[in-house]
Length: 64
Image (cartoon, rainbow, N blue to C red; front, side, top):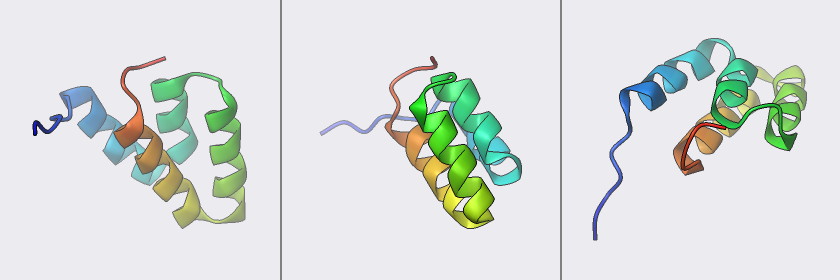
């Protein structure tokens, strides 16, 4: 079993997700439904926005 190593860009996105979760999702997935979901989660609570952003970053194959 091989594990996928995060790129430097993903590490940057993880740190950005702590400060601005919707921006990290926007850079990773573009202006898709995940971005709008993250906006709503970030408005409802800062921590849910971060958790969702980290999930999107870890599960996405590539940028946009």
